[in-house]
Image (cartoon, rainbow, N blue to C red):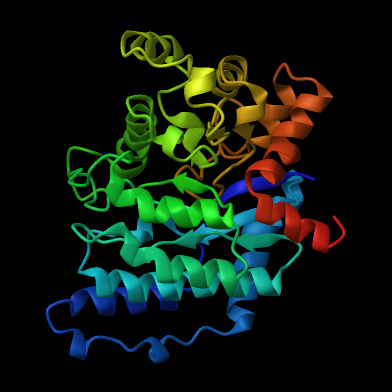
Length: 341
């Protein structure tokens, strides 16, 4: 199988965006805002958005299944208060669940959490539990900066995050460390904030002993790890100066990287620097970079082409395409086995 671990519902029906706009427009007067029941999206609308977009490209490019979560830039945890985020997260997660029910062979869910600046992450646990227990989701997206580019939260090693980690360990689910929209004009959302956050999350783990407290905790750092593979020597050297173990022992039992890197030299570097066991196939297609590369004539986010052209053995490709995903996302593996796959 070819499993894409990084997909977002970026093509949801416009009614979702319209509902969100009404919610945001009425933050000061929530009693005048839209009710959840006012959002009416039919199965036929969901089917149309998926069949004409994600599923069409999956079939063209040869992917079998996508781990599907709400649109990352729409999480916007900095908007409103916890109740705002809780309502919005529940709506978005339910839509991804419905997509997975309509296309069970091709999509399975990962949850957006109702994070809010200054609110304890433990407040997100009821939504996490619902998504795993009721929706069959296999992972979560965890935003290390719900302030939207101002980084007001403590690092991921801080004990405020521990209730989430305890629940992740209990359910044996990984978290993709994924920020949302930047409201800081110094940081472009997808070109700077996302990649900054990937690098920052890795460094927060490097400087801590988080995985001594949670030996089975699993993080997926997206977008190829930001600057991490390119500066692997720097991080090795910093770990050495901080008297930490070798990175392969300190972090690589717990941290994994995806292949959302949109050119061949980037994938070549990723697969040369990072052990193959720590690389999971992903495209984040119909996401931040949707155009066609004039140098190749192919879409930038058609990442399978880069894996096929990389200097990898057939076994290594199988690990990246399927084996690592089934190992890191144990609930995905169980769901696939239940389908006879």
